[in-house]
Length: 217
Image (cartoon, rainbow, N blue to C red; front, side, top):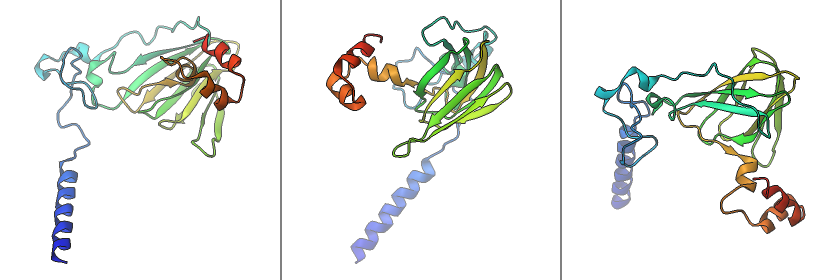
């Protein structure tokens, strides 16, 4: 019994030490990403010496410029994350401008590391996300200028312009590096390719259909 009590106390002490050691908030004013460093990256880029930081590390210009929507889906994302603003490193926030051609869309995709809140700046959008298994419920709505919609972290979601004119939206994301997995690209354009047998059985279609779709990616 004594040994069990000692083990329990030891485990509790170790657990408390880990909890006390964890600090979710930054412990410095900022951590400008040092993209040239060869140091191991753990949940972000290594920090540039703060004495070397300048205004340019916290600045991005060009979000007023429309994205080129001349592509098969008719949509273009202009990201503003740690790749564009090194000063965002560790701060847990980023932006994206999204342009849509008439009836263009941003295909179903996920952000594995971020919740997204989208504001319509121009036009009308049909947006939606799908809940996880087993329900797979589609939650969707048509948004107009000034409307706001939230896509929960990790869930498949999409946007489509439902007008004959252009549409523009602005998204804020809860990560400096939210990541993106476009479903069609991931499934049909992986490298190396996922087996046609696997995909044919998964989508319950003939392998020739899978082969035809994979050829587009």
